[in-house]
Image (tube, rainbow, N blue to C red; front, side, top):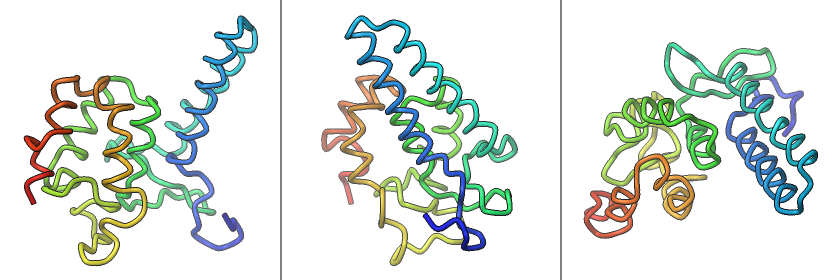
Length: 171
């Protein structure tokens, strides 16, 4: 990513989440290989990144994670930075529930009949015939639902989501 371009994010919660997930996977692999010291090192690096991501990208006022631009300002566009953080398990159950209730499951933002647009329906940058379902959107998060949904929302919700019972399938 060209960091010399004014306004481009230099700190991004979604990219940090992927690295966090990789570090957790490395910790699990080291544990499986009976290398506890390496496992602790990778787990510690993952936790350090999780904390740094919260510190750098989280807005307590909005309860949302934003990119930070080259000037250090939060880019307050409600994009789908939340989903990698969810799928990689960066949120506690309580944090997830607050974000689910406020944003991801809320029809005013992301819980639309065709769920999880790239940009929240409430954001001024939302364009349903343009940017709404481009990039890492519905299909990617539906495929990844097996990774995060049972743990955060329960297996019953997951099973209903994957069947025609879920509102997203009634377009």
